[in-house]
Length: 237
Ligand code: ADP
Ligand code: MG
Image (cartoon, rainbow, N blue to C red; front, side, top):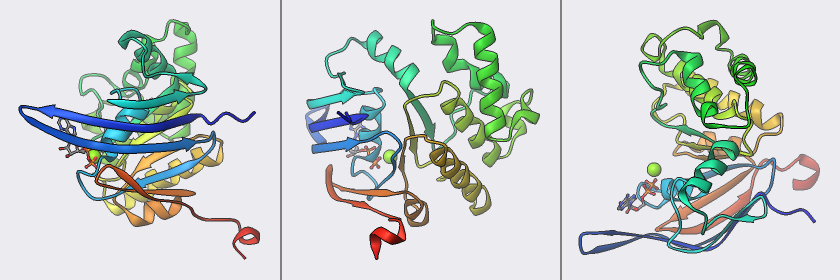
């Protein structure tokens, strides 16, 4: 009945560089339901970004199965994957990844311009709505260089949510921010989650992980812990 939004089964990722085989992910099986707020943590090089790239259809697994909203995606063409990615996935990166010669609203609109199902008027109204959500609509004509890191990351979050994706994937979204801005971005993700967004966030920050509802720990390409956090009092009593 309730198909998970995401289901990975025995996923492996091997990178081949020169003569070296690097097993970035060993045997990852994972289900994510709609509405979950998940953190992924683990030491540098353990495979977190690789996992997020596979979840976000930026990369493919070497072995194993991946279904997104009940659809097998492992064997789709590059173009089909790009189409699903544009519609279903919102990315937030540590380094914001805004385009410096586009202004705020152009940055937020950019991923929507690849969507053939949207009119220009629909795109404009989605951009406006997203910028309002992150409280950056008063900066829509500014360029990234005119914004603080925290403001740039809020714009990046707006870009991620504008297309109303099924899931937001965030790779260390507070990694380049000071405490005040990091707290603001975490509050924003928390609000989006409370409004129903499904979020999967890689983080080094234990306080950020504590704010999520489920913590997945990875070591050497394997899941070593997968625990529910922040249970309502009635359940944890
Ligand atoms: P994390 O995000 O947890 O720091 P990564 O997923 O970036 O870790 O990397 C996991 C492992 O895979 C590392 O050993 C890394 O060197 C390797 N790796 C990641 N991307 C590539 C790539 N494009 N080519 C070769 N090796 C890679
Ligand atoms: Mg990483």
